[in-house]
Amino acid sequence: MDIDGAPLANLVTAAQLEDEKIEAQHARGRLTARERIELLCDEGSSEAFLGDKSVVTGRGTIHGRPVFVFAKDQTIFSGALSPAHAEKIVALQKQAITARAPLIGLFDSDGMSLQDGMAALAGYGEIITHYVEASGTIPQISVIMGPCIGADAFAANMADVIFMVAETSALCVTGPEIANRLTGEDLTLQALGGSTLHMETSGLADAAFDDDIAALSQLRRFIDFLPSSNLDHALERPSFDRSDRIEPSLDTLVPIEAATPYDVKELILKIADEGDFFELQEAYAANLVVGFARLEGRTIGVISNQPLVLGGVLDRDAAQKAARFVRFCGSFNIPLVTLVDVPGFLPGLAQEEAGIAQEGAKLLSAYAKARVPKVTVILGQAYGAASVMMGSKQLGANTVLAWPSARIGLMKTEGASLSVEEARAKGLVDAIIEPSRTRIHILAALSASRDKT
Picture 1 (cartoon, rainbow, N blue to C red):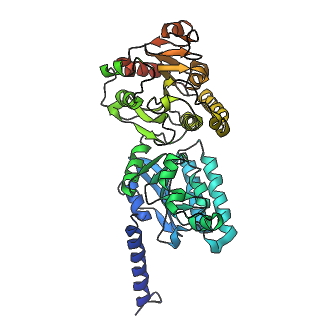
Picture 2 (picture 1 turned 45 degrees about the vertical axis):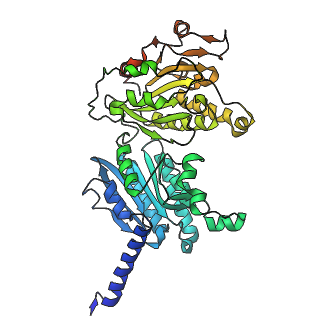
Picture 3 (picture 1 turned 90 degrees about the vertical axis):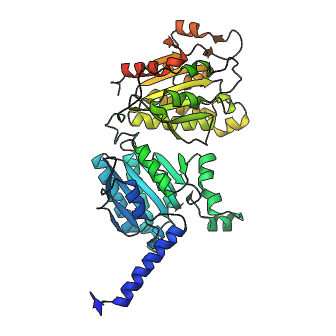
């Protein structure tokens, strides 16, 4: 018996083959493209997604807000990009730009369709061009959920934020077979481009999660911190935290001896609504902390020196990390709260060779260009040019607050530093505040500059 001219035996075989590919995907510890989309989007909002040509694309919602999503389908031609595959992604990008809604790419592909040659490569060029067009207009997020090799690695990196799945994802420009053949090295895919490498060394990944389910769940949480486009203000949601909450433990957070380290994340968690903080790049340049929190339900971007690591000094990687984050917040109208405890720059030839001057200049530029409300709190040390880079009044901070423990000046030596009272008298500081009331003062400062765009 035939169905539409196709032998029934062949149809059964095709169905079995599809099941086998799905089972193989599950055996690798990875979900299919459609399973990922269903978990990411609100229930029922992904029904109109279209899937063929090794990619699934469509419009859904996350907590009721529109998002545009494409998911590479590893079960069809290993998710390889063909001209038709590229056309679908470009069409989706155009829709996201027009609708001014976030674009999310779920990457799980062995690369480009070799049989399509230059036509497939041209498709990558179109995709990257539209990533550039959308940059600074809508949030763009890449989630690496399997292999992401070759031109896909560049496309994924065009996004504002990159998440990875530990152990099952890898991003690299050259796959291990070619790399090993040309270099003589014996590298696995994970060694060449796994989440550990990109979280700790390259700084490419903003966060890594244990599995697909955790990554998609955290992505839903993360989207809640972001506006839909650069025309929207920072997102607001109901808050159950008190605006007049006092934290007495903060009065003893900073040690009397400057050389004694402390964890600045304790402060961040205690001033944020419900202690909720979404940190980015946690394992990269850990001497600087960046991430998103809320105050009175409104999203803020937090940047802080971390005295627990390298004494909180600024180095090349920390400056790069901070500049990238400031630029993102500036693009999407997210107020910046900067917490300062910086003894200066990390000295040495290695830092000069790495380009500390260049990356430091980029951080200065990012702060100066960010036309969003900016509040800075000096907790302890604020010495030299490094202190200017950390959201100083000279770079446009609307309000600079200081704890009584603050020490400000050119350097630590006697005669080159000011007491916090002297700094206030010289206009470097607007007010000296009790640490326990930091949340209250930041809220007041943000409220005073809320209309700044």
